[in-house]
Image (tube, rainbow, N blue to C red; front, top):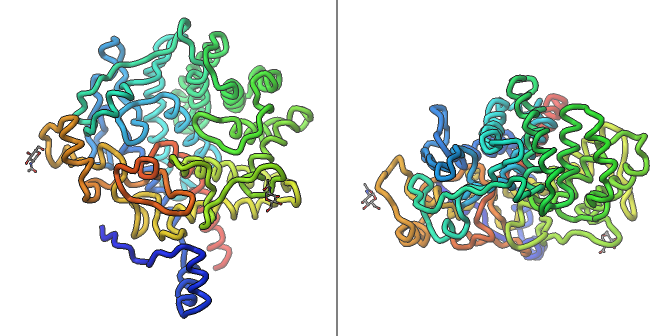
Length: 494
Ligand SMILES: *[C@@H]1O[C@H](CO)[C@@H](O)[C@H](O)[C@H]1NC(C)=O
Ligand SMILES: *[C@@H]1O[C@H](CO)[C@@H](O)[C@H](O)[C@H]1NC(C)=O
């Protein structure tokens, strides 16, 4: 891939100054207008990414071919088969909580935009991406009140730069049970299973029932044995279970616990795998029926706070934006917040459109089109409409990060050279290497630029160059939506 920068890099204000003075203006304007993005290609790539994160035995139809079987004895020391699932990011640990959040977002994407994903020819792949996670959750839920939540040790793993195929690090597994409860993990996994049971209802009803059964069991486990938890989780999973079963008990649970679990007590300006209030608030305000006026109103006002903050229309708190227009929450893996917020803005704008509403923020009200177009601006920034003229979706467009902080992608493929590479040898030979990664981690979304739109493509710069599964997952839905809208408008135009 020729990845020399095809476009000169300008800081936006600098660009404006030069614009006024020279013919560059013409260049910049025309160049800007030609920022048309291929959302279908982005969608395909975002789904493909999950194959590069797979752990376990890879199937014959594996499309990311530089990656090979790995983690084949995970859980064995504890007497349980935990082979499979996803590596979380650039390391080789399998963390249950972000994995569950990833699967929830992938499922939510398919529930909202299944039609568009199918039109793009990606439905099968999307379901496979979800199933790779849910198969693993089923394995790790070995008893009603036992859930294995992690394989691998963050400390020893992070002291090692090794392909997953060569792993020599501790592969200990950790579980939650009645004596060591962890309602956040059990709850998020229940939410992921309930959401995915909706996805599989048509394609594989038998599998869907199994998922739902485990979701219900985990719900009870989390509710009965409360350990450390992120208060919102109980409500999220009850909402998903209500959506999946239509059972009124789950719904009552959301109402009754709205206060004690803080779902309506907090005003949030971020949504991420460890802070999910905003997701609950937005989902509840779209899901709960009108009769529950008071609770609904409270969820709604919190959802509104989040969305108005994203749009810079709050009285008390707006989000910072970079000069290039990207929402900026914090320097470490900022794009995770951008992609999740963009997803919520997208589903919320659809909700407004469907119910013929506007959202009234502090000064003015916002219609669905304005909301959707702001979401699109964030996606387009990620795809290359930014001062660095770089796509932060790896493998998309002419210029993208080439030194993603990722053990497997930055080391010679096992298929090319099977010679064992040790922990420290990996650091010497591959991590510190100046050359681009030998394997392109297509569809990965890296941490992204800093508050001034600058990005340094260096493997050691993990705050910016590491990619995580939950960065990409929400974009699956957003790309699908954008692809669908574009397709419709083309039909309309012609
Ligand atoms: C948020 O942005 C709006 C619109 O620009 C502005 O009216 C409001 O004062 C801002 N709020 C804060 C806290 O800066
Ligand atoms: C394969 O890797 C080993 C260990 O890093 C190295 O010594 C050897 O030269 C490599 N072989 C090829 C063909 O690159």
